[in-house]
Image (cartoon, rainbow, N blue to C red):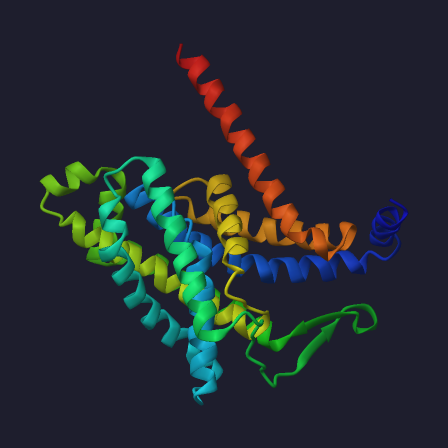
Length: 304
């Protein structure tokens, strides 16, 4: 307890520490938001709660790491992971997801949970259980009082790439024919079919796009943090927290929730210790679910 109180006191004694934690949290949260946006697409369009979301992220990271080992420039691993994970997402859709779209919630959860286990075990067999990362020989920026705040340029590049990808997806969803078809299917799949939209094609495209987004996020993550075959659950939990808190189809909410969760986790790690960082994500998920449950009960009471 004394250690916790001391860490809290440090935030007030040295306010610049808050700025450092906030900067780190926002940079981490930007990648959380990117992965969560893919989940929001699949959840909103197909009504599938993808428990393998985090494993797609880790898989994309290993794709970029493997290609970097073959001599591909690290930054090129992001578009490469996007393309390769698109194909993997399409295969997963045809083999698994297409069979559970019309099924009940438990069936889709069980199917995607099995998919998550399979991906993690395949990565473990192929690459081993050791943590991996791509080392970038970039400098570090220092600013603030006495240059206390450090921002690795690799992280800054990663955040910029995540922002470019997010903007590209937004433009695609608003301007392209497929983007319009995806939004129409999300609103009412039956009406979309009546209007001539091939919803099966839309579902396959949406899941593949989600997998590609996760792959790009994983390729960025491996350049700034560590990956390991069984780390997927951590990103899956954060994605569910963000989407549940923001609501389906609410992209600004997804971005805000992702940045907020990143900042909260960094504050929690500073106060309670790095060992509690994952527990904070789980606690946030429970709190969000409780709040959503209370809101639904109030809506039912008002209708009665």
